[in-house]
Amino acid sequence: MSKEPLFRGSDWDYRDVMRVYEAVERIATEELQLDVYPNQIEVINSEQMLDAYASMGLPLFYRHWSFGKHFARDEMLYRKGYTGLAYEIVINSKPCISYLMEENTLTMQTLVIAHAAFGHNHFFKNNRLFQEWTDAEGILDYLDFAKSFISGCEERYGVSAVEQVIDAAHALMGQGVDRYPKPHSRNLREERDREIERIRYEEQTYNDLWRTVPGAPDDPLRDYADPVAARRERLGLPEENLLYFLEKRAPLLEHWQREILRIVRNTAQYFYPQRQTKVMNEGCASAVHYYIMTRLHEDGLLTDGAFMEFLHSHTSVVMQPDFDDLRFSGINPYALGFAILQDLKRMATQPTAEDRQWFPQLAGCGDWVGVWQHAWREFRDESFILQFLSPKVIRDFQLFSLYNEASAPELVVAAIHDEAGYRQIRSALAKRHDLAYIEPDIQVVDVDLAGDRKLILEHRINDGATLEKSDAQAVLGHLANLWGYAVKLYEVDAESGRVINEFPEVAPGNL
Image (cartoon, rainbow, N blue to C red):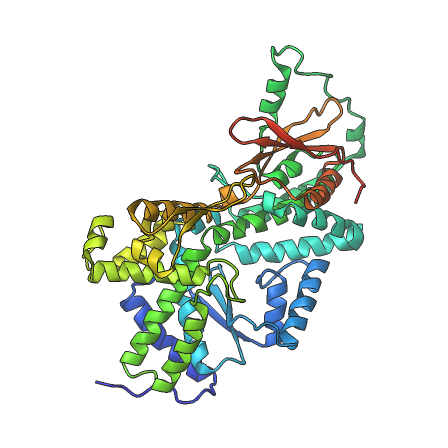
């Protein structure tokens, strides 16, 4: 039996939003079995949304000139009509904070609540990467601590001195994450409490006489058969997390500078799972909002007009432009994630002979909600594509594989729509979503702390992709400023270890 619609027209007040939220929550929890953090929904205007854009979408963050630059750029593009604003921003925290634009119609608020407050929220809480790498309960307290700490440093050491450290740390942010879980990582609340306790202890126990204590004897490694190997072992080298290495080993950094590096490193680590799950996270939220909005319409809770408005926005978001379309900028993660999840639902309920051949465990199982839950919980983009990208989706997206040899004059079509081609396309696309493959693998490999203290780094090259020289040279300058001594970078072949390229040595103070 059809029910009275939740709303008519586009105007709304907070009671309307609350009524919509309750209707969305019922479908999300009862039919999709979503398990979410408590929701905190905030309504903001366009300027506040631009401000949130500029500070990485975080509700509390320290000050830095680059955030103002981003704000000015985004505001100019928005005011001149070159770009629109996102309908929402959602924070992976407990409670999960979702920002709604006050300019949205009530249909859009319904869509955003379903998409962010339930789709993203469920993914944040249940995906294995977020469980291992992020601390939803502690992030807000930690951001508050970070903001206060850096503000205190600005007052004590000067804005310019703090800015130099943050500039350098931001330049190395992409190389400031641990790609593999470590056994005893602290949560962010423990990090904050530990730092506050350390500051208090140092203030109580500081004594200038400690500076007169004699240092350790020279060359403690002289009795080892291989002093270089022993030195590297003592320093924990090679080390892929450059910010972590600088925080622990940089000879000249003061305590407050190391703490700023730790704050930037923890922030980079907090965002690392989001970078690995863009397709899945957006696919999950899009599939959730599509199901909920459709069910609301089927139950008579959305008018035909509201549902048409929703479909217009939805299809704009999950559209995949052709390669020769001016809007094309690669494969749309919303489109790919949504398509794979819808295909899983189809395979579970209406399988074809091809589905039974390729996915015998899923085809015809009937439990499409269970299949979705399993995918959202256990996978990241690379493994999700490798596991679930079907021949049908490959055909729908008209995917094929090209082989590009730099020294050859022509491109080679390496895979088309046949059985071998499907597997090769799936493997190649999954590889393009593997951060360990597409991001530069740069590691600290050696430094003689008892000698010249020159920091030696290696970039392990995959598929011949070397670093862009001007960018690399600038980042090395920031690295040298933090390290306090010269820095040298070699590029080596990942398989053979052969040196392919080397950058000029960079000394501190060259920026």
